[in-house]
Image 1: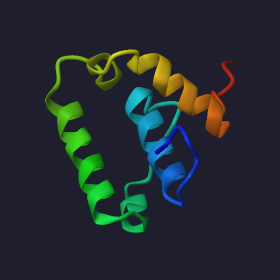
Image 2: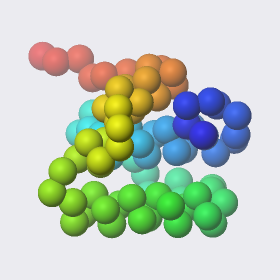
Image 3: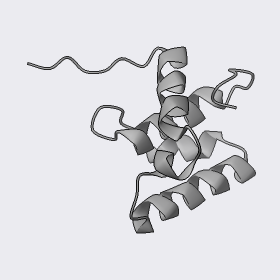
Length: 84
């Protein structure tokens, strides 16, 4: 979903994915859950639980995960903060 921009909820999902990849640079507001279908929100909460207990980054648990998340970040135009 986050890779295709075909849903009004896609940007919320994309921001969530970016935040699980790098929460310092891509903040996510948990109140965004209120604007999602229940099934999507439940999936996101399950991912948070995985992130909480995993001994690896979420993107490393999916084939080409880092490449996919970076593609989502680029697709949505999320901007990496400038370093000083």
